[in-house]
Length: 164
Image 1 (cartoon, rainbow, N blue to C red):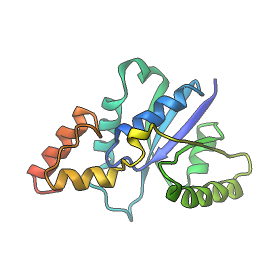
Image 2: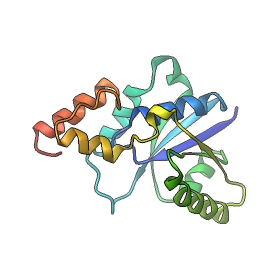
Image 3: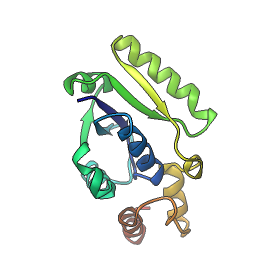
Image 4: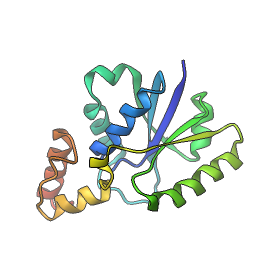
């Protein structure tokens, strides 16, 4: 069984992320969505909230092939622990490439067996990012086309609580 890891902050998960998970499942038997815990990075949603939102956002027919887990530390160490050497990274635009290439090369230096597979989302999601979704939600705009209903409700609750 071939497994890939799709890692990120997912604060919150967007339809673009879900599209990449779907694309990865077309290539791999199993995908681990690895939610990074970075204590130096301030997130809107707690790690538990992000894990829950991701699990609820995964389509029911794909849930058996997708694991959602938190990780802290080096992604290559997490990959070794999970006995896989394939990392999925999304490229929305050319501007993402330089950062992602540097990350992939660093990971390869840390573990020469690591391979990074770059996937592009559908064009309709090529400009969608978690930070943009949070910004639109904070300003009262509609985010229906960018996230699943559970995420939309969670963002609305954060805004009503004064956290967004």
